[in-house]
Length: 220
Image 1 (spheres, rainbow, N blue to C red):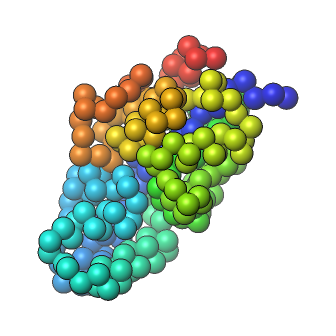
Image 2 (cartoon, rainbow, N blue to C red; image 1 turned 135 degrees about the vertical axis):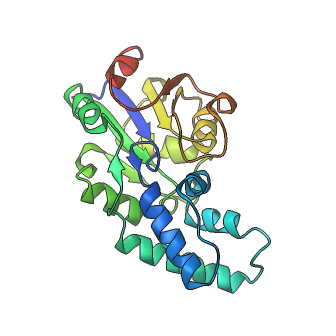
């Protein structure tokens, strides 16, 4: 049966609230290496571009030794991988929406700047993996968001049509990806970004996925 529509989703802060587990991993590293720990709100503003960028943005001028930065990032990823689903939960209405989309034969994919193996592991542990035709992480292709090919290559793999696709995300990285790929963009409020919703271009704005089917129906 031909797919009638395709939805591409970011992962962290979009369909899953991963901030508590990212914070735990971040603070584990900071404590181990003798640096200041962070609060949840700080982590959310740092988390949108992947582990390495997140750690680099936090270090800024404080740590100049690249080897120490790499060691800390490795520690972060190792710890996070072992504790990835302790407190991470799907956003409100996500599972109901994904079931609705499947019932309508809408194809779905993930485009995240999280490492592919971590994204797949998290989705499997939260029993969400079964909903997606393809999961692309930061290391799946030689490029990632905001490069539009991160989206368009996934679209090609799942057999979607650029004119019948929408992107859902929580940050300017996702918005720029969608814009660069010429796709409409749904912004999830209070995401993992330092930008306000007014600063991020979007076609639709949602707080969670309750009633999101009504938004998507407008595009079908």
